[in-house]
Structures are given as structure tokens and as C-alpha cells.
Amino acid sequence: MTAAPPPALPKETDVSAKFAYVRLAQSDAEITAAQRLRYMVFYEEYKAEPTPEMLAQKRDFDAFDTIADHLIVLTKDPESEQEHIVGTYRLIRQEVAEAFGRFYSEDEYDISPLVRSGLSLLELGRSCVLAPYRTKPILNLLWQGIADYITRHEIDLLFGCASFPGTDIEALSEQLSYLYHYHPTPKDICPVALPDRYVNMNVVPKETFNEKRAFASLPPLIKGYLRLGASIGNGAVIDEQFNTTDVCIVVQTTLLTERYRKYFERKIQRTMPGHGAPGEDKA
Image (cartoon, rainbow, N blue to C red):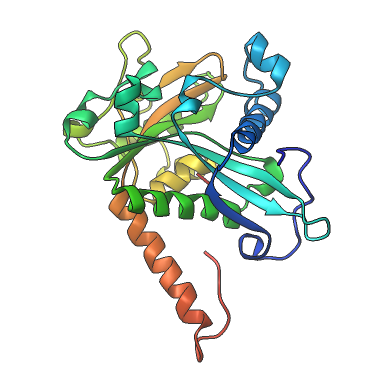
């Protein structure tokens, strides 16, 4: 099992059905491969600053990897039958984080409103897909895997940090302001950036920018969250190591599971007699 080099992206339209599938990593070797994939995306592609140990091993890793479940998308080369991990998500359930002592996001946000809500929480993080595979079928596979996971573990709320490339707040002012004005998390469950890391997202007045243009300029993963009904916590955070500006995402899982239940029901219906061929529906 390896993260590189992946096979060329198949030309067929329905990549997810024919050449890829999603599941949890089942071995240390698969977790290591997912960490190498993360290194390729975060450090080699997006120029994050690795620690000397990460640089030597060409892996992105931390203590949370030992307690997390690692969702992976695997593709199979149709000629060699060799499998490669091309996408991954790190999943940390509330009971696991509490036993460990904390969530990863607590380095950036006060998430006590979420914890006090009494709802069952799942933290999403370390999401990435190799550049040639950033297609709707592959991203939908990741969301399908998350939907199955939250159903199995009866999760009520998803949360975690999502990133903008770069740390220039002025350059990101329209996007951050759009999130602040149009997608705030309700105050009773709203995560807030830690005081020493808090960056005001209310930079540009609501009436001075175009809503559709601002949405279109968002990173694909954040747009995907918003399409699922996500809301945004209070304040952004600059992550110097990863060269990103982070926001905190909150998603009610009923929105996610309902969307995917309807989607797969439609696919099943279209494969039944009289319904024609199956169709297809990033973070």
C-alpha cells in the first residue's frame, strides 16, 4: 500500500464506481500511507513547514493519529491491480478525545459550547486528496464514508478546522467576511477562536461585496461544507506552520445523512427496471 506514485486518473466518467472505494484504514501500513499522502499535499504542494522528523520520514503525523480513525479513498490501477491511497480524512470521536484529554481543534478554538451542548461530537481534520483526484466522484466518496461513519456511531455534530491557503488577511477579507455575515454558527454552540489567536472575520461590510462571487471564490472543501448546511465559528486563526488561515466548521449531521440517503436512493432507483442507467452526484 502506497501514497505515491498514484496511477493516472482513469478516463471513465464514473471514477468512484469503477476504480475507487472508501473505508477506514485497517493497518499501521495504511495509516502510514495516509500520513505520506498528507505530507505530499500539505508540505510538498502547499509548502507547510515540516518538523525535522517529518522531513526525514516524509510523513505528516502527530499524537492524535494514534487515537483517530483514518478514512481513506483507494484507487485500483485497472492494469496492474495495484491499489493506492489518494484521499484521506482523520476522524476523532468525542469519547476518544475525552479519554485522550482534548480535541485537536482546541489548539485554535474554544469549543466548550459544543462540548456543553450534550450532543455527540465528531472532529474532522487532516483532509486531503491528491491533486489529480480532486474530482466530484472522489470527494463524494469521502462524504459517503463520513455519512456511513456518523450513522454507525450516532454522531450529532461534525466540527473541525478548514483552511484557506495563505495568511494574508487582507487578501482573504471578502471570503472571511462572507462567512461571517452569511454563515454564523448559533451562539449557543458557537466555537470561538482563542483570544491570543483570534482574527476578526468581519473585515468588509456586507453590502460592499457580491455574495455569489464571494462564495465562488471559496476553497472547494469549504464550499462543500456550506452546501451541506455548515455554519462557521467566531474568528479565524492563522496557522504559520501550515501557511493557512483557518476557520471552524460546524455541521448538523442530519443534513449530511439525509442528503446522502436521498442520493443513494436515487442511484438505486435508476438501476431498477424502467429507471435507466445509474447517475452520479470536495470537502
